[in-house]
Amino acid sequence: MRLDRNFANGCFIDAASGELIAVTNPATEAVIAHVTGATRAEAIAAVDAAAAAQKGWRKLPSAERAVYLHKLADALAECAPAIGAALALESGKSVADATNEAIYAGQITRYHAEWARRIEGEVIPSDTPDENLVLHREPIGVVACLIPFNYPVYTFMRKVAPALIAGNTVVVRPSNNTPTSAFEIAKAVEKAGLPAGVVNILAMNHATAEALCTHPKVGMITLTGSVGAGRKVLEYCKANIARPSLELGGKTPAIIEADADLEQAARDLVASKTTHCGQLCTAIERVYVQESVHDRFVALLKKHMSAVESGDRSEQPLLMGPLVNDASRQSIHGMVERAIAAGATLETGGRLPQGKGFFYPATLLSNCRQDMEIIQEESFGPIMPVVKYRTLDEALEMANDHQFGLSSVLYTENYRSAMKIANGIEAGELYVNRTPADPYQGFHAGWKRSGLGGDDGKHGMLEFTQTRLVVMKY
Image (cartoon, rainbow, N blue to C red; front, side, top):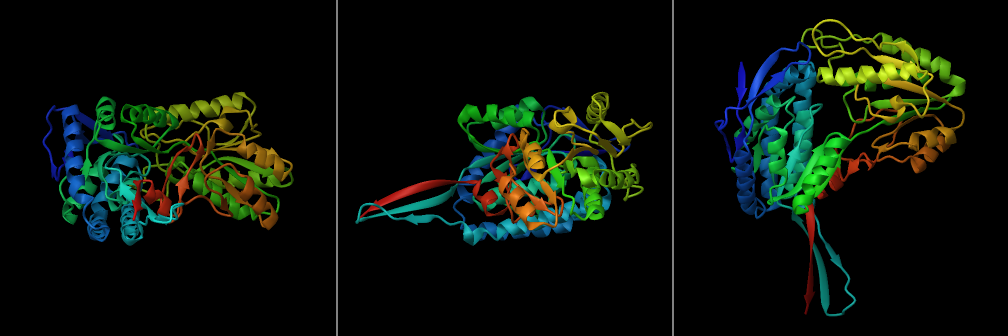
């Protein structure tokens, strides 16, 4: 059986404690690997190594750091089959999807490498005639990167690449559900020849993660995860006033106007909701449908949702895969049962399947209300609740009546409707006539409880910098 070791200060290290973390294939429930859990001392040593390496890394011209990132992008492309194979086993994704994720990780790495000559400061006019004000952009230092289970390879480089190009070094904690792909990335880091200590990757339990995140040499903690995990990170940040960057929960609303292409919208929404079994922060989580087309649209959703079949994607790649674990499945099923008890109509799905694997069927609920738990709380699964509305103003009010504000969707052919929602939606993103896809040249940032800071593009890269104002009198 596969056994992975942690990667710190440029090499794979032998386990000090003998603690092993079991990794389970969610499609079969079989243990497919073990990884060594880092001790508190190993986590602290990794931060110390990153801090030491950062002194030299930050002094490299950014163009030289870019050379290393391009080499890493090349190595990720070469290692994509191995990374994809590991990811498919630990996540339940198809090998094709998992390998593509590794390829996209290489692409975002190359994208951020190209910011090397574009990290710019400012010259600011002074009120004094014989004085210059110069604002510099500088790295923060050591960044702790906390990676989620759902897209662990892409998110790994989404955080690490901009941190590195800005002159920081990183200590990465992968999810304990999906750590083996991270150690395949470590092999790519080795192949690329990055200086020792620049990238460190350690699996660990929560107590060790706290030691990592509260280390006084950690200047920033970046997380993609739940609101609960975000609150925990904010507690960690208090210890040393570390900077947080948090991409947290989402409850993406989709507003369907009467003039929309209903067939296309239905196909798009179902694809969004069933990709990786709905385990995506920007997946459609609630659907608001104009009353004149409500029944027709629900029928289309039911047709497409009913056609979705679940199963082991290693055998049939076109099936919908599993949830991450049984706790997630039980939580989702409980939400469905409570929605039905509160008056929602079960159109399809909603039943716990028999047999191995953490599968749950594509589930459609109509006759939902704004006050229901299924509308207010993130499911992170293949559940689609539908609410009827009369006017666009009413739909906008309901879409905004929420704790989350990560992404949003509108289907309409009326530019006035599109502008109304674009100027009124309380979310970091709006997608018109398509579902979310997080373009890496954009800026993926949430409002409200969906997070602080953001990822991607120029603004995502600048998250990993701090400023120094130099006032020069002459």
